[in-house]
Image 1 (cartoon, protein in one colour):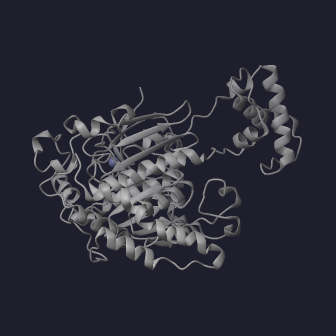
Image 2: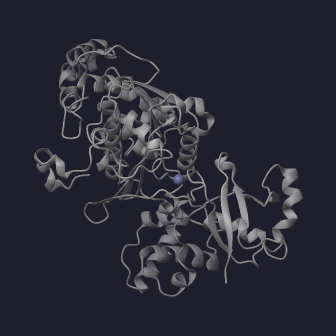
Image 3: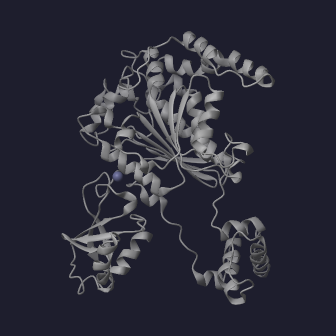
Length: 516
Ligand SMILES: [Zn+2]
């Protein structure tokens, strides 16, 4: 990311900028110490503009040919009423790629002039197979951006169908699409609007595919709202790395948003810090202590939680709380409002009440748009080498906050040796030796570095507790009430292995340390 004020300097004084990716082969001394021996090989993949993926090779077309064939091959307009606008699209096709081709076909301050071949860059991008995970708020933006950035072979996975509440920001969907699969509708929409792009939809979970499926892509871009899905694809891509096979390295670009905040990051599996290394960036949100709710509320949310947790229980206005029932939300809203007035706290509204009670994080179209643009920018940089991407060689994580004007911060998140996915050391786990195994098992859900909902635990070769199958669960259930030290005989320094069905390929290794 460049500060806005540096824009002109970018072209006049390139030597002051980050080490360009393609010069790395010429000036290795300027590069930071490679994190591992994979680096050299990966560098070669990234720096070789003539590197083309093995699958679906197509003969290269020059820029004018691409433009004219695109305008001829375009989908026929569905009817006469749309003819006029379809003609406009066709006529504008050459213009559509003009500026992109200036970036792709010309050498810039970050390209190695000796080996640069602009036509090969455009060719490689056209042949590249790119996977987008998620066709929701971020996914719609990503598909549109990637198609308009010159990627021609895109796959998209999303298991969800379109809900009416998606329509305010998931702009590839219309009211008539409600109930249809997101991936399918999004793919068809972008294909109609961007001539020559092929988008293959998959209406299923990412876990439904195996490594062979993921192996066909050169880049994976995630626009997900689930941490669990991110962790799964991250573990899968890291596991797929075979240091002797250059095509087994799949860069992962991950975008995420929450309200006005978001992040874009790039992961080069086994080379840079992975999503599991960065898990503490997604710490579960701290609950507000009950005493704050009961005695000294400071925020409108505290007043709403007070109405939700305390007042509702005390007064029981309805037999059971139905969060989708307007009468129930109205009751909570009015209670919260009275309490807010008492403490002089502004900001309690009906929609905030609904949001807090249903734990809704507002999805903001503008944030999605900023983050998807950043992610697509990284994809373009990795695919074309027109500029150094995030993660190479240094900063790999860009945070964005729109809470108070616009703020971004880009930094390097370090790879962790005790990462259960890309590291090989056991992670230290501080526990109270008097805890029961049940307390230990329950604690894994809340620990920012683990976040495991259904953990099974083994120690020093024996099974302490297994969640499944049912017979094994029954056999090991008795251990749950035993204490760690006397009951189970665990000692300081013992290594325990934790698995969770959500991450079948990962065994989380922990080394016990007792609290004093
Ligand atoms: Zn890691």
